[in-house]
Image (cartoon, rainbow, N blue to C red; front, side, top):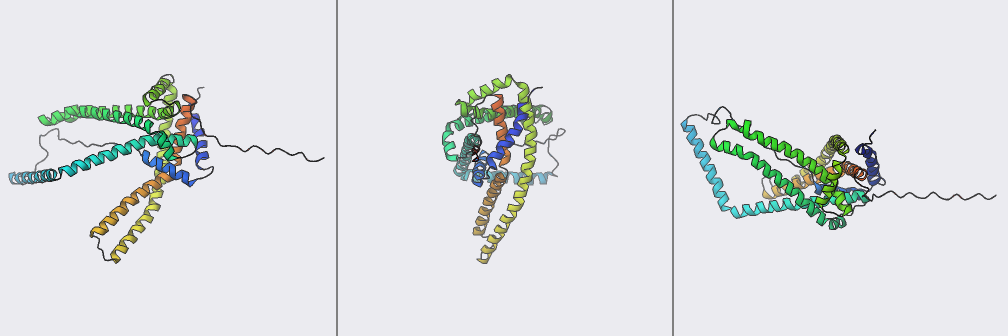
Length: 355
């Protein structure tokens, strides 16, 4: 009978997680891991809703010509207002967009660096964020470039798949949008998502290879894929078990997160009410700018606190998943991770009793 490495790695991952987080329990270590996980972030997606009337070239009956004229006037007024606003504040809008994109790029780079920091932390069972960041700035940049390249290629594929739909809209052939043009879009979306998920799984396995074989991301990725080609059943079982574990971990994280949000959210709500009452006693009304700014900042801070507390409470879950990946990789690819092992005290020598 074949030994399935991914299945055997579950018990080892549970043991490693217990040793790291509970033997002994160290709140500082939990907090550092929560900071790392906070900056790693999660995956996001884009949603689009498309609607059309395949039997008609218009979108409804808005009434007589008088109503149509009022609607046209309203649309023209709204468009002119938006155009005037954009023309007036174009410089600020461009600067705001550039600043937003810069923040997104910076956070993405930090997230890629933190992937390596997380691996080093669980392998060594010692969390030193600044040191690990300094050691992995180059690795994070390589991973950052690869991920953004894949994302841009996927975005280009989506845009190309939407060109027939745009052409149908411009020619007024709305009946062809869903049955022809959008079918290509959904096909690209599904296949592209599957391909990105597979590549992402291999990248996750390649990160420790980059760290402990001191190679670039493409070289590490090629080594992992080459190993996978020669052991396809093990990889398929790994994906299956990871999928099942992902569902279980997701449900557990949702339950724990809900409990944290309910308890901590109630405390933060009471703090907000107390702050508002203090402001009203000082003579400020709800519509005053000071009150709106204070409550707005308090709301943002509360959301960040809730996110961090939720991550802090669920630290064992991603740690377990990372140990599972590393133990699978160690037995499937190569013995490359110098795992920290708990030090066992030597047994005291027995002293012979005097005769």
